[in-house]
Image (cartoon, rainbow, N blue to C red; front, side, top):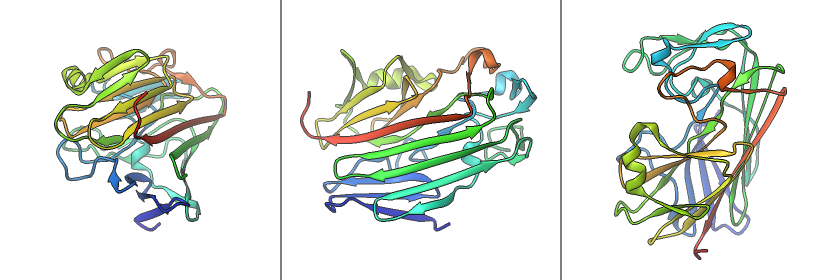
Length: 269
């Protein structure tokens, strides 16, 4: 597939760029909303986390399933699979990854961050990611198909550009979480449960309303003041035990669907 896909909204005021399935730019009303690679904080702009979320090293990188144990590294291995384009037009792109059970996949974290050269999962699955750029929002849909009963965790890890002044905050229900609050949590991230809508409020530039369906939880992470990750998740990982047994995961119905909608706005509410 081409390295970069460009989508344009009908009113021409929004442009999205996607690189090998990764959202690398959302340019709305002459403002970049997405953290740019190469800037301090993180070398990516977003990833998916699947079929597990969080670290695995304390559990010897093992995950137990009804079909036996498998090897997974931090945040799973979905990012190590390649996307193929299913559909592309002016404002829509649909991409898909397909995995065959027990196929060994080269681990991008090896050898610098992990001793596991290859990772694998004990179930077949297909994973579809769709982008739809509207005049006032960007909708990102996820759909995966698998055998019924497959355990999984799923998270989306987009990163948003900040001013670097530390004057932004995240509004969650009736709480305001500052960037300093998020930074203090460190690598464990800042979780909120039973929530499907949050707002990133800025003093400079456009605010962002994030609406989700299917996840029901969200966590925040950053170590710098020029970016913040707003991450919808199905489960918050057990950081201490790193136990990924089926009791700590969701069980697939065979088809699972999730939505993240990014809505820029100027007025605070």
